[in-house]
Image (cartoon, rainbow, N blue to C red):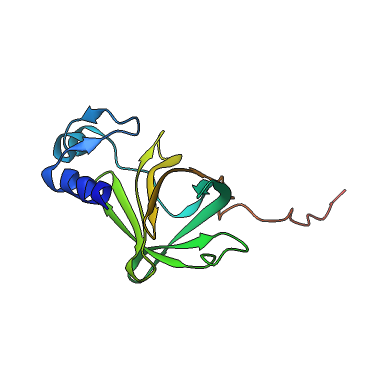
Length: 151
């Protein structure tokens, strides 16, 4: 719990930690110098270690009428299908469901290919790195079109 309060303190004061734990300029200075973050909607996956056991976890981020939401993809686990609210503040992201006591505080890195941060659930906190899965562009057909030959 102390780590989350510390992270919230850093956000409130404008300080920012990079993915490697080194201090970097505050959010105001960084936001003016960097391009906008890549789009967040998509599927993000990675290994989550809980009590010595590692399982694959996925977050499927979509946009609805209220903003960004994420759904946990963890087949066979009680968390599978759990909805998380997504809040973006500068470079930092918060995925949360207060009723289920779940929080993932992270930042996008490597030009938006990774979400790197800390997963917190029911009293434990673990580092978590999620990689963005490549997606098929909506404009590309899922199957090859049937083109009649004219010769």
